Amino acid sequence: MSELGKPTIAVDGLHVEYRSFASGKAASDRRALLKRQRGLRVVHALKGVSFVAHEGESIGVIGHNGSGKSTLMRTLAGLQAPSRGAVYAASRPALLGVNAALLGDLSGDKNVTLGALALGHAPSEVEGIRDEIVEFSGLGDFMDLPMKTYSSGMQARLRFSIAISRDHRILLVDEALAVGDKEFRAKSEQRIRELRDQAGTVFLVSHSMKSIRDTCTRVLWIDHGNLVMDGPTKPVVRAYLRSK
Image (cartoon, rainbow, N blue to C red; front, side):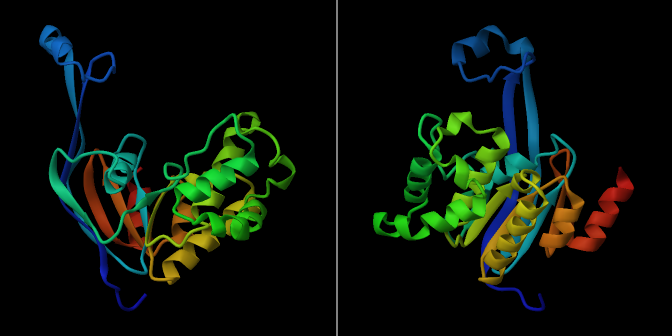
């Protein structure tokens, strides 16, 4: 993409710290904190991350497990408060799988209705997009069954299909393309490219460098909470693979 669109997200000196006990239990009880200060552990998940994202960009986020990728997505979505620094967004980012509030006891079909309404579709719009969501998911034979009978992969496919039924200005996708068969992944990657080309901004967290190369125009490489590299996809992925 030769020219960048308008900025959609600006991240300025972002730090995120978690406080937990050595056992891993969250340190949310003030009285417990006073009693167990020695066991208190501070995890610095993000350390001064800064970047600006623009309309029409699809941005891959890569790094080893525990590097801070998912923390970054949750912070961009407003689900995690920064310890220091700030996130500025032109519109509310949609984190795939969170905005679609699906319920296990309801059928897949009823969850399509619930998820579409949760994403902001008007009730009058739901019937018009239902067939598209079901067709994209490839789960037509299972839509009358309760969601709790679905495998985790089937649930993820339905969440993704609901989430991309709306043209988000900013969409955050965390490992969603790891589910489903080759055909579903290809459809998912194509839909992400369409959202990008409609002047949206898409962030994709993935361990699949093929998905990153096929889908993203830019990559953020995060390591131990630090933004190590930010640039065009090929050189960043190449540097990341060499470091492993």
